[in-house]
Length: 142
Image (cartoon, rainbow, N blue to C red; front, top):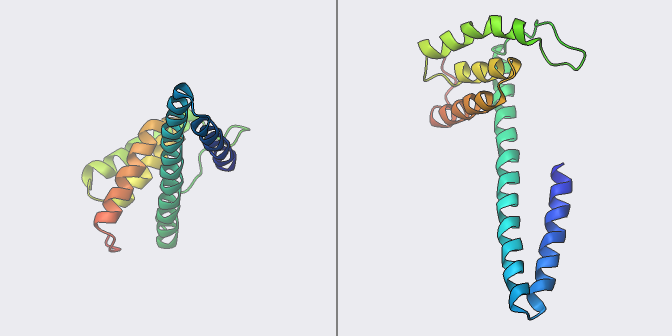
């Protein structure tokens, strides 16, 4: 998808240049709008890619420490965990964050629990908090 978006952005910027050099005022206004929208789309794409890189780095760190939760939940045919089973395990991860709110590991595991429960918005928020805390305290303290 990222490659397709980049291809789309290249085509949109190219079309914007064509409009800009057309010499018409309306064409120039449309070209500027295309450039602005392309810049916003590129920023969003880069932000999401950087989020993925950072979360993958934290996964590797937790995996090396043996701190990743064991995925023993029952799964659907699609591979997603059954929500009821994930919801049963959720309180332990929430309690871990409440007892150690400065721990990026606890926040990361909470993000995984939110994701397993189907709450992607809160999962991303918890992962971003984990990234922020890890950036502030990168030392491997437990």
